[in-house]
Length: 274
Image 1: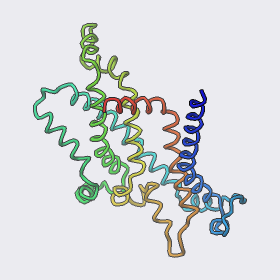
Image 2 (image 1 turned 180 degrees about the vertical axis):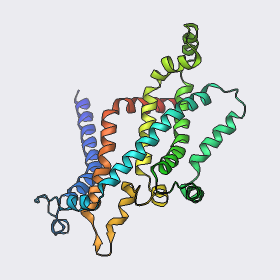
Image 3 (image 1 turned 90 degrees about the vertical axis):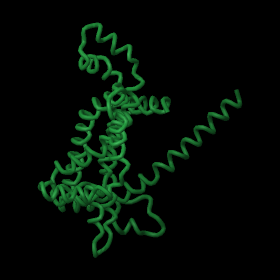
Image 4 (image 1 turned 90 degrees about the horizontal axis):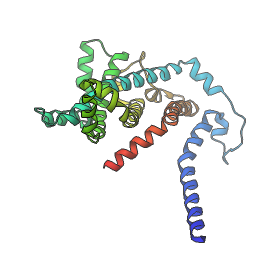
């Protein structure tokens, strides 16, 4: 009994220390968003200060809130398209193992993810210049769709492979077509896997910098691309950078909070499958 309480206390202590290590940088960054420059660089460090909104006023006056809207549009749209296109593709790769060139096609899908962005951004730039896709929502959505689709198909196909074939056969005997069996019977079972993988794709697109920096522009500038513009000849605007970090964190936290049940279940299923 005593050993059990000791282990519980040790586990709680480790968890609290670990949480503090993770959350302290976030707290420190968020505090900068509300500190005046005098409080930021005061020595010794100021822990209690009068909050100011001067950094938020600067961001709004200079249109930085459009960066947030741009990030939301391209990340959400590309993730929705990845789910729509990638789910049947993952199912096909998992089920139709006798399909000709299946392994070659799957390797090709993976290769598009393995290639570093620096190898692909120049061809993209040349193509986009020709088709007027530079600095457009469609251009960035296509890029994020391509590099997230391979990851999505790769991960979700492992979930599809573990679905019992007997379920599909039973649905077919009940009168469902192949597509009907997939939509009505198998798709609900894939909900956790789809959610977990889609959230990861959203985060990848949300944090992406290189494609957005080189293929975007003034019209479609995302949050990560907005950070370098705060390094000016007059100095680094730390408070405004902290706001971008804070605002960039909140949507991801909201998504993870509301979908955490499916995310944990999906990731746990993936871990069990190896």
